Image 1: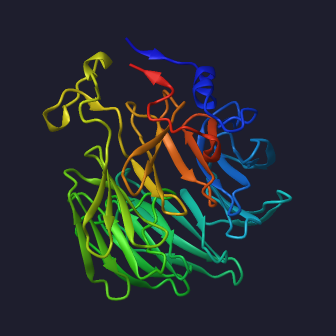
Image 2: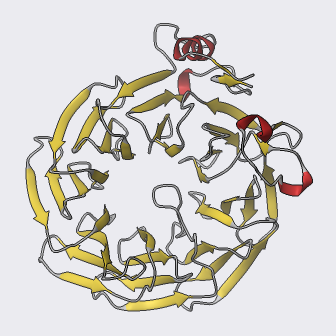
Length: 411
């Protein structure tokens, strides 16, 4: 029999060990009354959060109190919203096929980027100068799509149209210096582009890019920009030299396809997630596996109770209670934040990167898949959001002792 604890009980469990009892470890924020959250991101100084939602708004929130500071009204769904590197501007992508540039302080729209026919996402380069957008154009036949990436120079007005992917573009991510752009597609190819000229510099083929990186949840470039990591359907992650295109390491150990890969802040480690219900931490230089992150292999849901047919992985009955869709290091590299993206695991979890020990379970999203889980840039908070209209801000300095069991449900 399935028992769901109410949100009030969740708060009691989390607050019970706080250092400052008057301040909750978690703040729950309701975005609106209709639709759901599409994306969420911290400001560079960790003081604000911006959400994009299906209720035709992007909203700016106080990350300390959860108070709404500003509403950026759109004509349709807002698919993505992110801060500029200096935190003064916001770029959004809307379902009306426009990307928009906003003043974060006043809420005034500064620029509208038009020309798309089916805009998917928008992001801004680390130097704040260029905006990248992805357009999937539906042709006469539903299975024929033209996937175009555009780079917009907000200063000169120049637009580069990047063509080459033959299937849906999954993600686009800038290098730390903003000079290069990596794109990943369902065509199994990762392409590297020069931002200033729009010229293709490199491409890696052979199923390496089917899920090469997950936007907002992975860091495919090393901090120095000299390496890039890709993952794919061959159960491996691969580290490549950006300049030569040469393969430096093949990370082998996962038994099923990988979902994401991310460098540590110092560039010495990589964390990967996989369909095999594990995350793994690797040494970049040697390619050696350092830690295996997983739940108790014997602690699984009995899928028969769901009235559905599920093929038990690895010969075991049911599905693991801990699953890994994405994982990323904390800004200081000491912790790993993972999230589950299935009906069986709607939690984010924090792990000790050195020992592989699970430290915290951040729950409360029962009934909804985790859309995003990310550290604040200062590493003091975590935000989690699912497909509904609620997100949660977790104050890591006020959670003590570590929570080692899910706080929100019991089966």
